Length: 160
Length: 160
Length: 79
Length: 79
Image 1 (cartoon, each protein chain N blue to C red):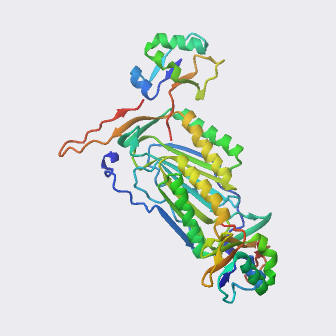
Image 2: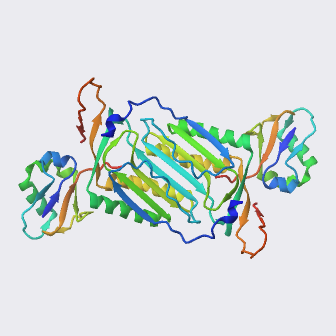
Image 3: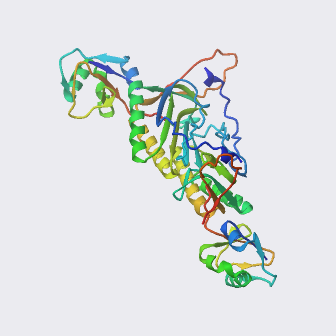
């Protein structure tokens, strides 16, 4: 029975706060492995680019950031909310540059003892990110009718 | 640029409701792939067995279900809340039998247009699951001091 | 009429199910009378369990048929 | 004193940053006066942007030093 071979609770080896900002795809980032035996809840949120932006059909969004401030703000928010809701660990990855429809722009994972703490963390983190973190959707790339044999042409619309 | 090769929004191919009850490990179940361009939020919750149950250190919990009713109730809850919160798809996997500390007892994934809808779904789904779905923690397997050279011995504590 | 038992009710009774000899439809009250005649040990559990009938929680006005599958549902603790 | 610009403010001004010639510390009001002298096109944006100083949002009573990194933060839309 494999529960007999479970290790006798090694020290928690989670980094409590892991913040990343990247130009790469983040689809393949799976749940943070945690062997912290105190964890009863792992929550993961992915914000994906939708095919509609302000009523227009698009194929991608372009994100820009004030990098050092964005990183600091993402981290400060994480530290404050982790303490307030007594969560155990959090990981945040925000993607920048052109993000195609259906791909992940932001990934947040939070581990906590009980699910309510994680729910509160995630809700408040996203609410505050949406008002405080200097990251912008700067351009929407609209869906254009295909032009046979035309060279690839990038057309974008500046967002307000 | 890979956003140019994004397919022109194929029909959504998500199963809107996927309910599973299993004796197998569910650690390796990753996010439901979705190429539905309406999805803006993917939320995943994992409920893990913690090392502490009622103040006692344990190594595993054993779950039991009234199978057909558990499946029906999980599905009815999913259908009701999916409609109420206008979510797009949900997947629920509940593990039964002996689940070691640190492993997943329940996995819920929900896809929605906006994150608020997914948050509401997940919160209410778990709240209702905890009162309505006929699944029980029937036994806790306590942590025992190691006995050198003793044969493996399974001792468990009946939960109230 | 078969009555399924779960969790600690199985340990309490030593049974996974009880069979109430067929007598036609039963009210909720009639059901409990017959069940406790059959298994008095369950009396202390009555305030704590809900009745399910054919995989759904029973309603106060239900009448149970001999072919129904009944179940005693102690407080659940899944997830 | 360097002032960074982001998102549509870059398009509006054609610049990624503006440099206010050094004059010693500036109040928030003094900062705006100097900035709008330098780039009048930003006047219409003032009600919509927040000031950041050294990677943190500035407070109303702040005094900005010539070595500070300032930034105009238009409404954010990450996530």
